[in-house]
Length: 334
Ligand code: TRP
Image (cartoon, rainbow, N blue to C red; front, side, top):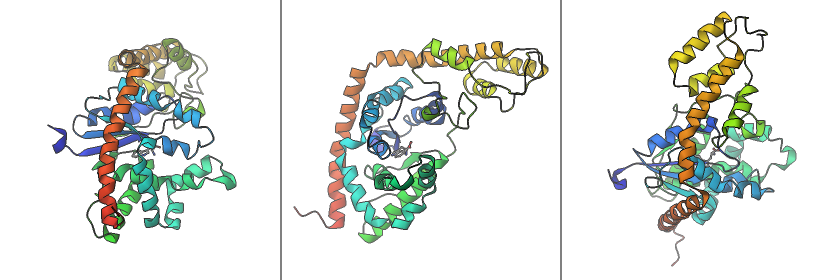
């Protein structure tokens, strides 16, 4: 099917660090599947990353191509999908400014995801204005390219609601049908806990296994993983449910017979953590192998070319769309 007949998907990541296996099971794997059915745009959300890293732009800049490479290594196919950098599409920033008038101050402050994040980040009195407003900019990310579908985790639901509110208000205010409401694609995302048993794998918590980790790093991280805290000896019956090591086995070890055998013996107290972890390391290393191989085929200079090409393609389309949007707003003067 040519791209003309396909519906559009927009997905993206904030480039603030290398991607980890939590990203893989949570979004990247699904994204890679969706690119066959949809015309997929992958946004490297550097402007959004700056809303809470404005004083550390190097952190954002140094992860742009890394994040693109991680996605490509996982199977995002530059022949099928378009990868682009948010800050290189000035039309997104322009649209954000127009959208800011369509959303009330209170509405922005009520956004539950942003509220939680503001608390977590301990901004105190200094929450950046840009941070509070990032959902409006995210609506621009989504609407500027005529997106049909956005695959997201539940934490992003308020962003998508706001996106559709903005689309509706734009259309009714400027008497047009230019902006299309989007459909969120929920329920496909899975959350992987951290190696320390924390509810979320995240770089800031130092509990990740990264897609680019070496075998040695994987082995060392798995060795340190939390298991069943109540189990002292390998001969004690252990808990499988809620045990991080078994949660990882379930996610990442395709050898069901091996996993079931380990679980049975763990419950009986006839297998030690060492064997369970050793088999988990091996499974993770095997899982990372094809990702590593694909990464080697796409060194950073090649990734840069791909991103530049995708960004140029997106820029051309963004310009045409913004012209239409300005026409609808009656501010296209020439
Ligand atoms: N907010 C998303 C995140 O934190 C990143 C993002 C920015 C995004 N713009 C987007 C996701 C548009 C989907 C659509 O991961």
